[in-house]
Image (cartoon, rainbow, N blue to C red; front, side):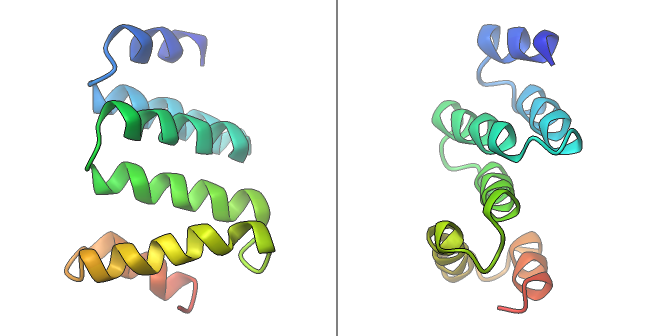
Length: 99
């Protein structure tokens, strides 16, 4: 993890570095860390829908889909679906969450 932190610090516009770091956090069940990684990635690479979607995923997993804390993320997912109705990954998330 520390190695990828160095990569994204040095090359913050390297999307793959963010993805690897986020997935390492995710695989370790560190959903708060995963959420933070993708939030920082969005700051470095604004407008990349997949990074936003990954952050939403981590937030929902961190708190649980029915929790009060996840409501904002769920609303953001619905808004994202309206903004990008043809995005297959967004559709998959909505289907998986039965939204």
